Length: 338
Ligand SMILES: [Zn+2]
Ligand SMILES: [Zn+2]
Image 1 (cartoon, protein in one colour):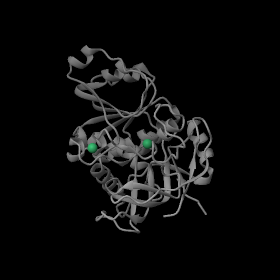
Image 2 (cartoon, rainbow, N blue to C red; image 1 turned 90 degrees about the vertical axis):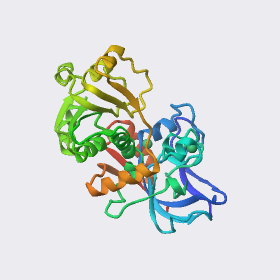
Image 3 (tube, protein in one colour; image 1 turned 30 degrees about the vertical axis):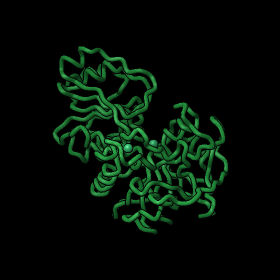
Image 4 (tube, helix red, strand yellow; image 1 turned 60 degrees about the horizontal axis):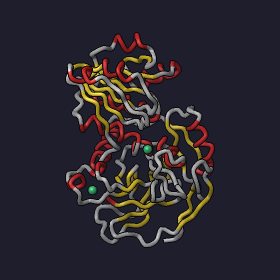
């Protein structure tokens, strides 16, 4: 295959600039995908800025990839050239550890992130292990589906893993890229949904996404009224919160589940967990099988992220828009390599 044109940053804090690389021979278990469009996720910014101290430059961001397969490795049996697939945060895992063998590939400690030590989807083509390239179901709008592959499955997986019931009362903290998809999933799941946001400007939109109730995450009176009511509280923000006030909204046996990458520790009172048998947990992305289930569920219930579009050649403008906090609610870049 020929060299791959992409957008890359050469160091932390640098703008993205044209870059190309030789992907080498296609591995037997891999596929190569011609990128049609790719979502822009907050984790792209974190890796570009080396916030997690594990970035490998040059960084080609982009891990919410939708495209068509252009080549399959010699051992790939279940995918064919021309098929439309999605690739999310991970492009490989070891395939033999206990987690991989149990179907929990997303918990493998050798998961290959598509944008760390590997070149991602702000490119004309990208490679992935065939198991992590998930066919898109018919009936799902491929032009807007990209953000489901990272943000979407990140908020969907906990519903499956923790057996959230349609009779449950579910809260979603943070109505942004992740949270607005979480509200849509929770509503379609059948739950009574309460959205928590610090932005009054998002109250009406949160109702539009399916929230039955919207409260201010900064209003202690609002939080106090919810005391001991929520069965499941999904936290999608990456900033410190009044954690004890949030835990207090949990019903007996309720769970506060963290999917936002909050860098500061989360201090809570042990007795607030013990007395009502509450839990705090977290989870990363989702397994290939859960991604496929999530895409089917999204197609069935007409769930798509609300997106703003940029041509990929304006990726630096898109990054600035994301950094400004004004994205509503997720950005998708359309590949425009001429
Ligand atoms: Zn992401
Ligand atoms: Zn593994």
